[in-house]
Length: 224
Ligand SMILES: [Zn+2]
Image 1 (cartoon, rainbow, N blue to C red):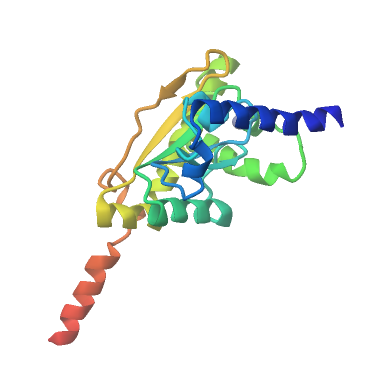
Image 2 (tube, helix red, strand yellow):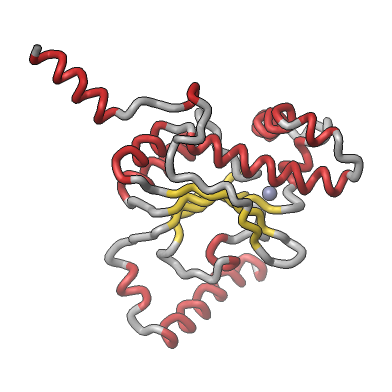
């Protein structure tokens, strides 16, 4: 119980500290949230979005799962993404992976872990897509780090393939999507330089027609 109670005690101390720094901190936040960022990160306990970016409550809308995946049939992720993009109208969506990710490591191997093996399958697909590059890396640690990076890049690409992101781009040229990797060893974040705010660079098969244009074309056709 001591361990359990330490969380509730910690909460009281945190409230006290916040109120000392900013007396209306909770009062202000109680009126609503206007975060500018959506964070899609790993569930790993060592990668807390607010702490590692030195931000506060209210700054980042967060979705976390094992290995920061963007799976197109994941209703949880899609609901968070849709709400963040279309209701909160965030300006940036960040996929943040991390070196030393247990999910990515497990996906490199063949051991069974249970239900999670089905989730890891999506990461194995990333390996298959980049197998030529990854198989050519002899050093296992270097290969692991690169796999983490490639997984983040693929999840960024998967974000850009959603109708949610592409419709937002055609309506307001936002949000910009980005891929980051956090280092557990240094605490530093590396920007992978895979930022997108349009579907121009997407392979044509993944581009969806703008809903707005399609409707107006149909309407124009009907008047003829
Ligand atoms: Zn992880």
